[in-house]
Amino acid sequence: TGGMNMSGHGSFIWYELMTTDPLAAKHFYGAVVGWQIAAQADPAAGDIDYRMITRGDGGHAGGVLVLTKAMCDSGARPCWLGYLCVDDVDAITAAITTDGGSVMMPPMDLPVGRIAMLCDPQGAPFYVMKPMPPAGQQNATNDVFSHMSPQHVRWNELSTSDPQAAIAFYTQHFGWTQEGDLDMGEMGKYRFLQHQAAPIGAVMPRMPDMPVSAWQYYIGVDDIDRAVAAIASHGGRLFHDPMEIPGGEFAVSAMDPQGAAFGLVGPRATGTAP
Image (cartoon, rainbow, N blue to C red; front, top):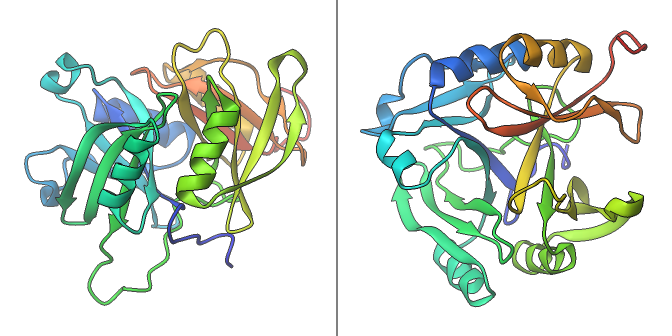
């Protein structure tokens, strides 16, 4: 279905956990989400310690980049980053720089495609990528983002110092649309984003307790109460209790034991509060 396997310019095609402890991440996300994370580095990544995240259905959910001491010394911190598919990495890097964004990592070629790490004008980082499909799979669609499926990222949420400017930026450079919003009262508007007419996420004002503008990615789970209990019992931290969202499911924001922030979304399997 078109909304499930989005590809093309402006679609989220990969998610990456940067972490200092890949085995702790394997243990934590295995318990919370049900993912498998490889116990050792992928040899194809050369001297970079990179590990694949696999869903229960065998598909890839993303990757884990292990932060070295040198990376941490130069300011890298555990976090989740998303990859946006682009038609031309160099062209978009130039356009975004001209438009007030910044370059964290200039365009470079990898075996899987050409990538760059950029920041939007408000400072939220993300990757852009022109993927190179595997031989014989030129029409392969990518499903790491799926709006309704567990063990996929289901929602991409930008908290930003300037929602209006951020919406103008992403709609201009990535072909997104912004239709519809929820009024959060004093917290301002929660504005919905679409790509190719399908919902992909939202933009909201950055809360005072958030130090910087950033994307947060909500991972689908089968049962929000089970997942929340797993966060607590595996060394993570909840930012708030599960909140009901339109449609009757629940969402929560949390931090893994290494300090990477993420969200969860899913049903309450019991139908009642714990």
